[in-house]
Length: 187
Image 1 (cartoon, rainbow, N blue to C red):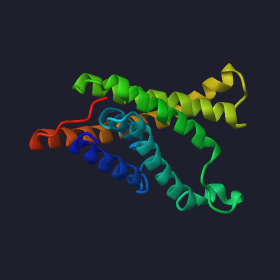
Image 2: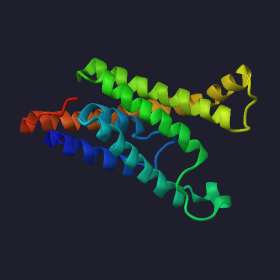
Image 3: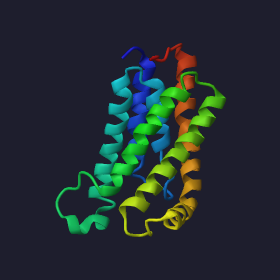
């Protein structure tokens, strides 16, 4: 890695992923912040994806086999991947790409745009995934709109969670950069 700040970014991503194991309101999670931090601070292209996705997978693995185990009782055995995870991981990879692009220059405007952007990306892709892959909604425009409408109450928590964790992560890393004169890795 090109800089010490990348090590701190990796640490934040891992701690953020594990914070998903703590009680929290629905969708008030660090997923967007993990994607933005990975896209912005991890200099090597493959690390931008591997580390945040591995951290997300680790927290999902623990959640699915402990706290959320009752949701998957019929599957028996160890749960590595669920149908809904495909849409979450697809949105997560796009959020990392988005973060890499929008946060080439880290400033308040770009971080704010990135935070809102990853929230919208997550909402659109995961709700589309629920619509297309579950039998909960008819496969027509009315069903898609009903699915998006049903997801709206969770969208506010997604935004609030992303704002909280982005401020925490980017704020802490900016303080470290300033305090110890660290330079972030650039792509």
